[in-house]
Length: 110
Image (cartoon, rainbow, N blue to C red; front, side, top):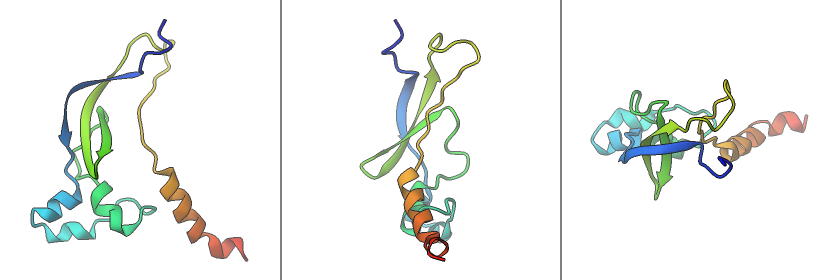
């Protein structure tokens, strides 16, 4: 019975993801000007924007104690019928909802 089997299995060890915050802390002054997610508050941009090429589609990214980590995963076999796949993702829905509602406030009251 595969009902209680996780869809993905983590492999290897976790490593810290390089973000623009880590670049800034290493002396890259331009890193503070990063803008990668229009809906996220500016204060968080350096923390959630990863440096290009540091995270791949085979990585699961987690936020632990304010630090982003990545770890490889593999999809378990024979969990779904042929042609059906599942992939992990985190969606910053709460931030997007807040951003959109305040951005659209004027048009809602028009």
